Length: 400
Image (tube, rainbow, N blue to C red; front, side, top):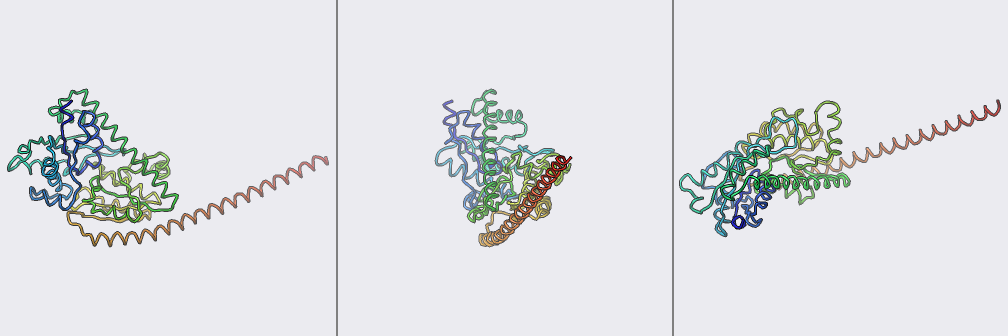
């Protein structure tokens, strides 16, 4: 256990770590690794990217390319300050998903293979990991099958931590519980903000993007710019799943037989094998049905899974009259001036859209008030007529 307390683990801050970091943190901490010894690489920046980009030539998409730079950052920055023992960069295979009736929940193949291609970049000419006395760990992980996941984690960490199977199984359960608590807390907060938007007739933005698009270096701080203007940003993976909310947005469609469940996307997307793609389609459906939300789709250049659903997502959103905006083909270049102009233009449009939302809501309220007033008048009239009929009936009985 003492050795575990001294163990220092470096983790690249890339790809699906933006979803599963709570699980890995809790897993390692429950086994005795100290929280301060779980070291993440820095957030993506142009300097971080350039520092490590010369080592390899992975060129499918920017989120995959920066894997090399983040491992370089761990070795050249974090390791030099205080030595790391392990770099943990797992290959994500099958992911978790709350959606129903999907074909699969697989990670993007490029994402899955990135840790292995990164390893090649640091070992092809000379083994950089061995030179720095660092163990590189990149197991394949299936998050959807908890028993298989536990086996995969045991195989990876047993030689390093000296684990027993019982220890590992307990740590896996702790990890999943931490992930569930983390996601539940974000969903609770999302519901609170959504309720506030409804009360105040404000607009929120749902970012339709993959987990790694939460990295400000990948989204070029577009989300930050919108937040500065007062628009709350919702993640497609952590929209609220409260029963009353799902009933309000999807209940009529379920009862009509259009979908089997609020978390069913078969009406919009049949090829549901890619986890992030599935979540993007469902989040688009959610956004399209909520009057206080608008959609902002972000996608990286050369994203093979996003390309086939550009039209699907846009169609879902625009069919309901909900505003739809997009920043596609994001890569290492950051056109700051262009981004600022587009953000300001979208802000201007959303201000006008909010005015229309308020007008519509007030119009609905006026109609409902008029209907309620008319109903009260009818009830009063009926009561008066009933009383009149009763009085006449009493008089007739008295005469007879």
